[in-house]
Length: 148
Image 1 (cartoon, rainbow, N blue to C red):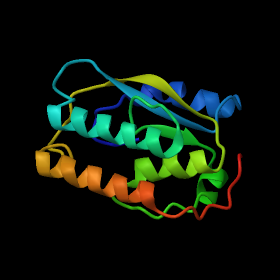
Image 2: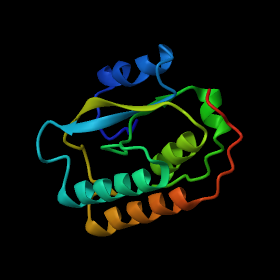
Image 3: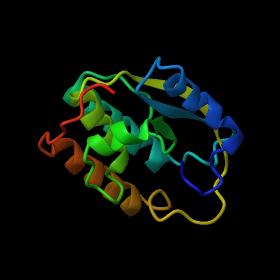
Image 4: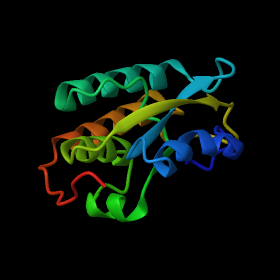
């Protein structure tokens, strides 16, 4: 999960429990803003477009490519993720879907950020995130990881 205070660590159990209970292989926290402040227009637009691209690429309908997620460590390492920038969330979902993982969303509160965001603080930052995530979705399938 991101460490910018937009997510409440006390809600981690919502994301982790389906993995522990073996009802999901990858759980993504779908952010629900508690106020309008944490979700500026450029973030909402970028997130909507990225979810549309994930749907087109994988058939998986998501409402968010949020920064809070859970999966088993060894299985996640088996996906051989490469992106270390903004593409990581999309690459994780695409590679997990390609590997046949059970992917679900759960609701989590999205709180006002502390400090300035280098990604969502400007339209240019949002554009960079979309660019990185789009590139991660187009990457060739290299995973040897089947369903965990």
